[in-house]
Length: 304
Image 1 (cartoon, rainbow, N blue to C red):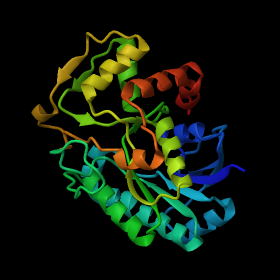
Image 2 (cartoon, one colour):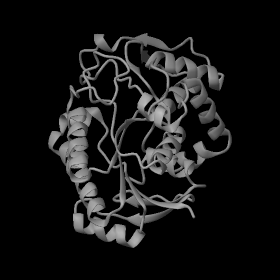
Image 3 (cartoon, rainbow, N blue to C red):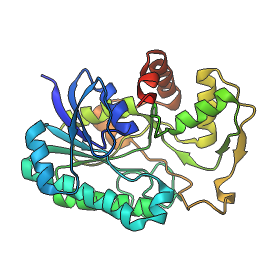
Image 4 (cartoon, helix red, strand yellow):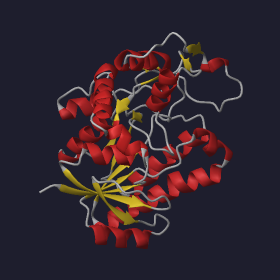
């Protein structure tokens, strides 16, 4: 019997790509708040993250075996402009979900970020002391603490993902592909590094970790530390697009952008050791992304 999961933030890019990735192994319910979507791979349930009691009732109605908390305010700029809103969405609501799962005895996966460090070190592991440098990172760091305090059995996933975007939310890979296809101006930073992972690969790895009864903090990212510029180059190679018009930039030279870590790369050795496999490099993930487009996922998601 397929596992039943309830995903918060169900109208988001991550949730929709995740639902597609696990459709053959999970019965997925997308928890929606304001934005409404219809997605063939999942059931729909209205959910109120503001109330622990309402969350408990939703869990008792849906009867999931796992709640995967994806709802959050991920815009670094907006978090900086509205820190109280960022704290409420990223910390308070995450704590509410963790408490509701603890009350009902349902498993919890909390999706975190790679924006938790200063950017001075490469391929940091789960034992590295956190040192966020912007409001977004600070709220996500506080969320991890509150989630694990309320629900010590929770699985916290630090990651940086991409997949096919909706009409209202684009992935970094969407931005690159679209710009290359129409020949618009595109500047990619050669001094910003990360370890990106395709949502499909992320989702399957996380569900395997659930099956192994993992808890605590895990970095679930790709095997390759890569710059944003080199990621764009690999996108061009996979999709057969011209790259010569792309401009190379330095984030360190930008004076008007909110501070971000220059190196967000994470080590995935802990997850890989438990899973008994590597999670794949950028070229492998982009090949799967291209396959998804050919098979219709891009069209399906982008119409939402």
